[in-house]
Image (cartoon, rainbow, N blue to C red; front, top):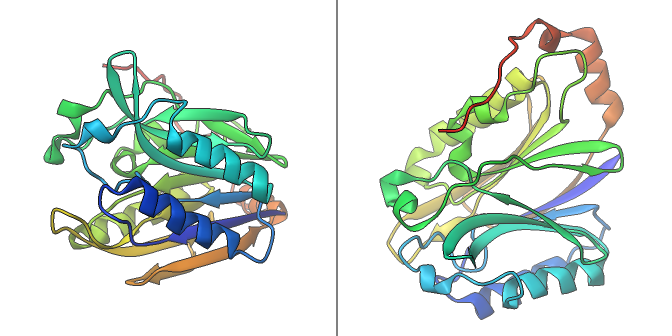
Length: 261
């Protein structure tokens, strides 16, 4: 079994200290131990693409906070934030282990509709992490619209078991969010977890949450709209294996190679 907590929350616009204090309270309120705690995209600032002065270095306040919290609660903590490095700014998801070590994924698909591509540098590599015999493919928001980036490779042995999206996905495009999360689960025969925010940001955009947990058949096991929520749940590897063995669709897939533009 793998126990996961997702936190669907409002965010304080461009206020790092307020967000870190808020999430610390929420994390410390979790009563059941989780292997993984998932926070939204840009959880420390909100999706503020024009405010790259808020980007931190890898030895900055938010990264140190994530390490401290992961050690304190003995859980992996993940979420994305703006990171500046060697003259570039990245929308970077950090995967912070309970011993303080970390791995990272830089958002591949930048949201040009909001000029994210003008302010940030795109990543080029996926991150598939391992926990208790599970493999998790970790992605960010707009990546959801590009199925090739999430697609399982051809063959009997899938690359991963869980696909995670952390997001600031506006409520007016919620139909796409909900539909694509279900599609990614069905086509990749995996659990899908989407963690979004709620509330209004500093630019007036509304966020309705709609964080979801979806099984490998596309059935929605959890869905929360409109309000904050802290949801802890467990996933059973036997359920996943049963579905994949009964419906071995992935072995009939197409072989392909990703080429980066």
